[in-house]
Length: 382
Image (tube, rainbow, N blue to C red):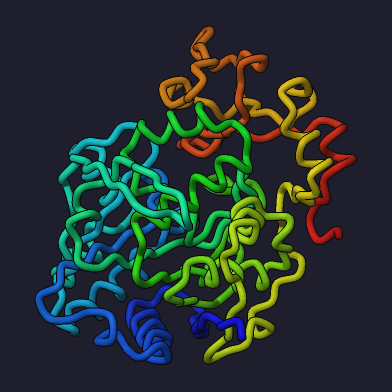
């Protein structure tokens, strides 16, 4: 008989620190309590989604109240929590200091005695990833941790459709090295299976999703906040993402990571504990690009010969401040600055949308051509 994974769902209506702590504690208690996972003296890495330095009200990053709540529970169990993250782009101590401060993590963690990582070294890790051996350069503090808690954010994603628990582990790869994966794997399905391999290699022991306020639309950084009012917890990042997909009415076949997970034999079945998914169902959650991942349509949309017909990043010159972050972080190096504004060579663009993700002013959007509009399904359309 096929086993079910447990996903614990708990209501939480806002980011009041004590409400978040109580909700997370209640959710984890249904899985056996924090002491089931954390033993005294264990060094525990808290891996949030801190994509870029951004005010937490934007919903682009894991809220500091959720990170602090997880850290408090670890402390109560006798563990030693430390926040470990690598944002997109440069990865050094100065960048981390700015990231922690602007995302509200520094203040929240200082209040409760939770450590922040500034070690930017990496360690080569080789692991069996569902029957095949892979090696990755992983953040050393994650490798050295006795236990990893993956604290993701519920968001849409311009490239991968959805970013949740599995994709959050891509932050285990140091800064600009992420760009090499984008460049070497422009095919979205290949990139999705690479995300699964990274998740399997780093192997978080517990996954949490901040869905109190999610992001819909033009995610993962420039979308619109959308209240869901939930915290989700599971030992399985795949089951957690599946529950999140069910909440926002996103079919598995329309999501690259979970479609690939099924292809690789990963069990996505789950048992909801606490509250049912229907309690948080959001049928009109705005998904910017549903791939309907049938092979014919997928191959058509990913064909290198049809690059000119693909969605593409476009700049709003009225918002752009000419900072050059998009140029500096373009894996394909197809962006140049002309008169203080970015210009794209679309023939070489691999459509990874790193420029859109990392733009601090949200000045880069994704423009769909007619072919995509005809083949894709928008919003709640099926």
